[in-house]
Image (cartoon, rainbow over all chains, first blue to last red; front, side, top):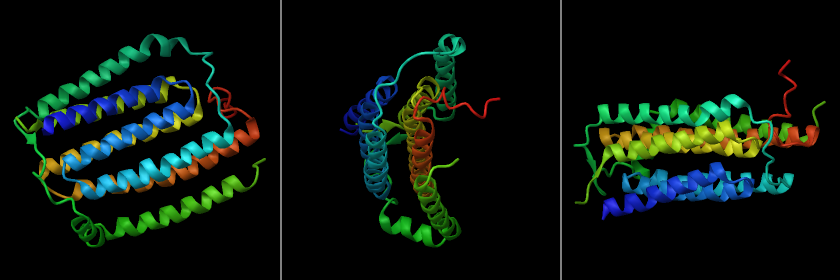
Length: 166
Length: 102
């Protein structure tokens, strides 16, 4: 059952990710990215990360993607024109990507020989309670710095979007 | 058989990261390039959660949480920059935004 769930949502994630890359229209890419994020949330649940799964749906699939779609609509972005592609990218891009993927797969195989398995319910430490406790004890300083970072981001976004830079 | 090898999760993460890199390198639309970055961040988050399961510790979840927060802040600022670029240049093609090149 776990394997079937993993395969279904892994295939959805990979297909949507390929769609993000190959679609020419930005709005199609954005909708595909929502699919990737939704299926990743299910995989997080499978790994026992219920708080992160909820945050993934709310923050990523909700807030961030709404922001993306809003900007795409605001800019009235059409399909992108494919021109001026550099020769090096055309020749070396896909082979180098395959080499990168092969190297990653090699290291994963070396480090994780396959006898370690995941089953649903094998780790129950990802509740909101456990994360909140760690967040306000061990990771208190990064948490506070994060709040300042968000404040800076809000002010920066307002300043940037308010007037034209010249 | 109801247990998934942990390397499958890491392989999925690697595939998603490679697709994000491909989108970042091949696409010319600035918004799509930005979405490819988000895809890469998501792939790394999956690795964090998987390692958190492997070590049976909650720390990986915290790292994923911080990545999410930073990604949200980055999206806000990045999209504001895109709006400004579009206002000044009237283009979304990253090849035409090259005034820092010379």
